[in-house]
Image (cartoon, rainbow, N blue to C red; front, top):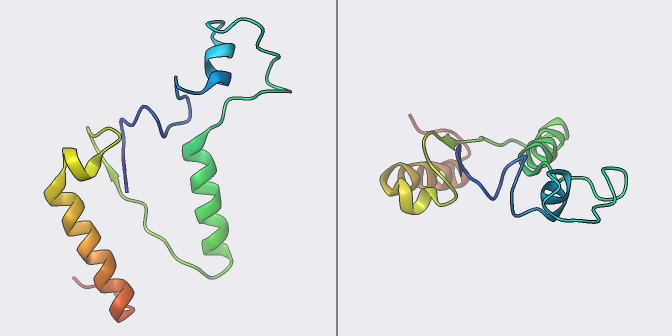
Length: 96
């Protein structure tokens, strides 16, 4: 679960020193070959897809118009999704 508008867990995070270097905000950035920006969403998605390819399963839930804290910004939706996940984990099948 994540927010679609998350500024920290993103593919272009302004808290990433490499992103700031690429934007020429931080002097002396050595370039992509040495210090590439970290595409966190793409990296996490790749990990989950590899997990699924090896027999695991996952559900990606992205909350629209939500930032870094869906549990605070969208508590009811977050809790419903969490309860649904726990139910699936306990029973092995999706509740409808």
